[in-house]
Amino acid sequence: MERSLTDIKYNYDFINEKIAEAAMKAGKTRDDITFLSATKTVEPEYINYAISLGLSYIGENKVQELLSKYDEYNLENCSLQFIGHLQSNKVRQIVGKVDLIQSIDSMKLAKEVSKCSLKNNITSDILVEVNIGKEENKSGVMPEMLEELVEEISTLPAVNVKGLMTIPPICEKNDEIRRYFEKMNRLFLDISSKKLDNVSMDILSMGMSSDYYEAILEGANMVRIGSALFGNRIYK
Ligand SMILES: *Cc1c(COP(=O)(O)O)cnc(C)c1O
Image (cartoon, rainbow, N blue to C red; front, side, top):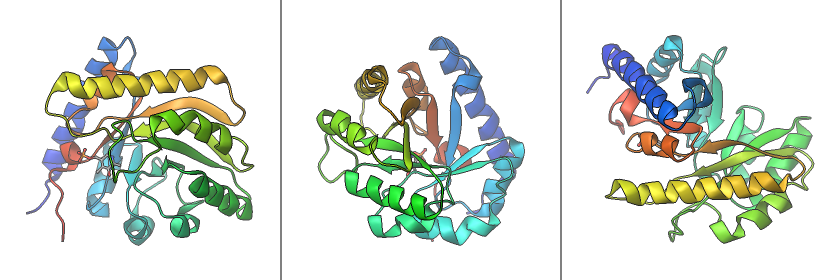
């Protein structure tokens, strides 16, 4: 199967319209919402085509894949972020290469990011990933441990917490998923109100191809969209 540039262009415009519509319904504007594309399995030529259309944020979820595609991304007008499960021993391979690590869910991982950032003389921006559905075997900090973790991370010298990220459980019903998004929004606002040092709750990253519209209605200001833009993933 080949991807088609025509389809990508059509999908890109369609998603932007939907984002604008959902933003309006949520009392915001299109510019309040960041459209990040999850680019796993997508070849750089297609990613770069989407960037040429105006896509300004991309996210990879595997360190190996990110590194293998790194030299080919056209990043002048685009931010590269890391959105997948991360192991401590791989942190040093991406610190300095990505603008935001969205998947920090433990102090151990945050410490490693801080340590590698200090070595590089930089500060790294991160999101804390929340396991909002409290699912076993899923990444993310449990909601009841979130505040403590954010407070702990805020003491690290070279890490700034910029917000929260989640991947909710697979839900059959629309209002079921909306309830998870709503819970996330509440956590986001709670932590915002604490005004911790090195913590600014700017980004609430939630919503994927099948539910970004609902996520925006519930307060997401960053959505991560893969297959709705590039078509079904082609695993080789
Ligand atoms: C793949 C991926 C997405 C996007 O998934 P789609 O359903 O294809 O839109 C979002 N977030 C993360 C962390 C991903 O790995």
